[in-house]
Length: 165
Image: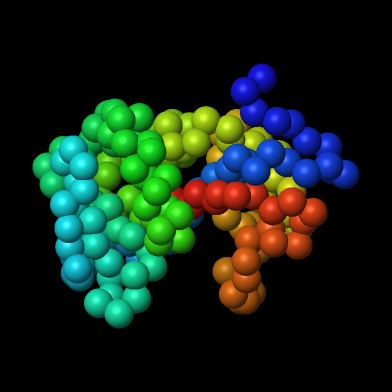
């Protein structure tokens, strides 16, 4: 196998990545018009910018014309090194405006950007598996607030990357 496996008492490979499906967040808060600041051209048909002129987290990547899943998959394979560099430089990347509507499509994009996905959730919050590598963000009822936290930071070897949709 290309990717390291793990038992509960050993550290998962540093290339570990987890996917969580935030459909409600995506539909409620991430749709509609938005303004980007400090815009610059990214490679091969994307533009990049930030939601704030003073806070450059996350880096927002938007398509300039083709917003299809197929374009994002092709773009991700071609520009993986650049994406990895931008993730290290900015700490987070938000791919916005692409036509990713189903958990399986999100999983395909996740594999394109990081081929070593894990399919065991190691956290303590209740989650539901949606696809082999995609889990719900939380099964906590909406009336309970979820305090700000660092996802899975308490486990022996926290994942290097987390992806949310």
